[in-house]
Amino acid sequence: MRRRQAIAFLALVGCCIALYLWFYKIGIIGKLQCGSGSCEYVQTSSYGALFGVPVAFYGVLGYAVIFAVAIAGLQPSQLARRWPTTALALLSAGGFLFTLYLTGIELFVLHAICRWCVGSAVVMCAITAVALSGWFARNSPS
Amino acid sequence: MRPFYLLLVLVAVVAGVLMWRASRSSGSDVSATAPDAPAFVTAADSAFQGYVLGSATAPVEVVEFADFQCPHCGEFANVQFPTIRDQLISTGRLRWRFRDFPLNFPWSRVAALAGQCAGEQGKFWEMEDALFQQQAAWGRSSSNPTSAFRDLARGIGADLDKYNACMDSQRYAGRIEASHRDGMARGVTGTPTFFVNGRELDNTRFGNSDAFKNMVDSLTGKGRH
Image: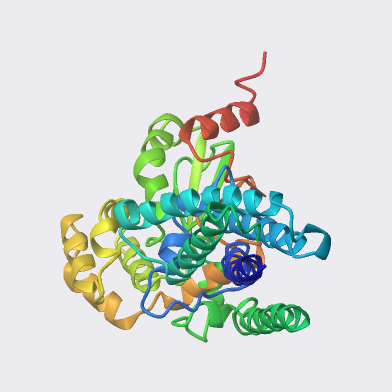
């Protein structure tokens, strides 16, 4: 149960970060608070969108789905079930690979770092670690 | 379990308030999104409608709102635009109008000024090419790239005394701001944004020169059978 709670909490934080970046991308927020980072350089690059959709929107969707699955897995009737653990492991693994791709673009193609993207990457890594540890701990369904 | 859900609600509420404040402080206020923007814009500034490339009688006009430091604009200018210029503008089928829409990059407005000061000497398009071609070099500079822009101006054959006087006076800052405000009024939120004969294009469909060529063909009837 603790793992699913942790994942739900982290997914909510990640969703807030992704929402912030998405709101910037669609013009609701005019300026990113980025300190000395290169958030706007990264966000307005051609890699800021995938198939015409802002990358941040995929983040919002991904985190929202992980959050929903974690919350569903916390319901009393689902606590002993294995499916939320498996679903969270699969979803977080997918999110981790996507994060790896985006971080690679920042480091090796754009040579610029967006602090909010780093924050999101840290959150996704944490979710993946917690989700996979739960999946490998087969004796403990939650 | 209840404290956990309260924690989630607390996180959501705090994030919501912070984002609401961020949108209030910078979402709709032009001067806030452009911290170096001058407060004063003259009628002459507003009357300037950008630099034009191509025939005045071309049947199609594209207006591009762009930022010299925006990577996507640089990619478009360096990869797609040369083909568009050769196949459509030089042949009299398309007229291209460049409008400044500086975003919040550190040197967006300085670069726009450099473009305008070169334009004062009839060398806007040469400077536009140079700024975009060298964007990777000056775009990530941590110090003001004015000297790099001066080198570019020298490279395109501009009169450096006049160019320097223009940059020092910032006499086109109001013109750039007027262009930015015009873009905002037309719904521009990012760059590059294109308008063809007054209508905004879907950037996801017009990211390459073939798409522009097909669009001009369809508008001039050349592609019809």
